[in-house]
Length: 171
Ligand SMILES: [Fe+2]
Ligand SMILES: [Fe+2]
Image (cartoon, rainbow, N blue to C red; front, top):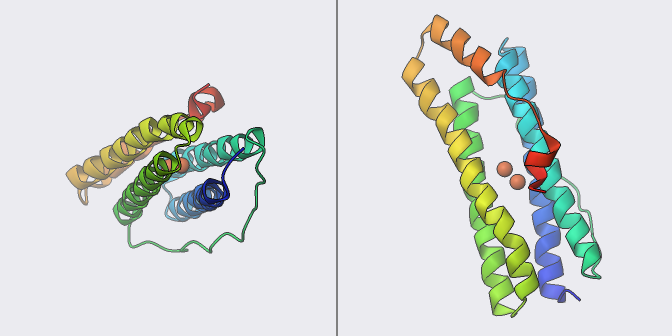
């Protein structure tokens, strides 16, 4: 059985994962509006991954005899200054999520909840990937600067990303 403290903290994290998905859909729609359909596809895949993250947490809460409480999801921004600006915001957001996951592990340890601690380790590893993939795009976008052909090439590259549910769920 989950302690109330852990249940509440995981419910907050479920909201954070759903917001991440919402934020990335908003970014994908911004990319589409500036004719970066490859970047939009990349971000849409990212949004779907976030739903997998939320889903895993939700099932975990039920498996441990807790209750999932869904709260309202905050409205994400509509516009960014540039594609780079949006990816920098995504990286910043992932860093914030990493610190939330870190705090959850700390709480699980304080509560002596080894099951939650173990469960959360998947998210710890996942956040390493999340920060690395957003960071890689930021670096590439900085390299190409204002180059139109560079922008064209990176959009093509980002468009290669395909959402694979099994990889996202880690199962
Ligand atoms: Fe996530
Ligand atoms: Fe993420």
